[in-house]
Image (tube, rainbow, N blue to C red; front, side):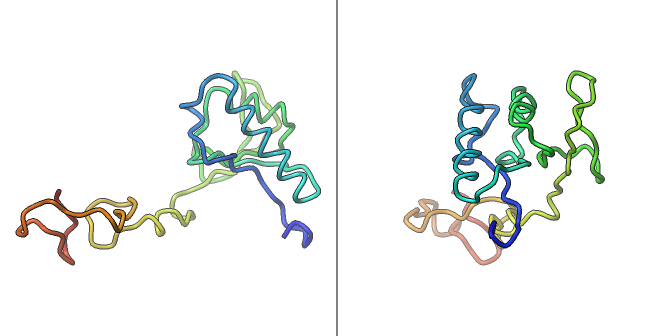
Length: 143
């Protein structure tokens, strides 16, 4: 894909939750992902969309340190806008994502459940509820 001119952007190393990481780990994982993407594609990524749109208090400094041109993790508007850092312009453009444009809700969707989006239960998981509460085509498992 990169050889055909498509951009390869950073999305994380292991789909980590940045706001739950110890200090410094987000930076290390983001740089690791960046280095691997550069090695594989032949060019350095210029943008990022953090895993699960999880923008931590350290994410902006990492974006700036990497010299990225854009982020696509925040939803403050429908149109692109410039990110500020402590009230100062950064020159970094935010390309805001939107749930309606994301495919994750459709893959995590359980059609006959009131809970959306969610993950499907494991095949090996058994419902231990009485048979009157067992899963039906119109209701999810209540156990």
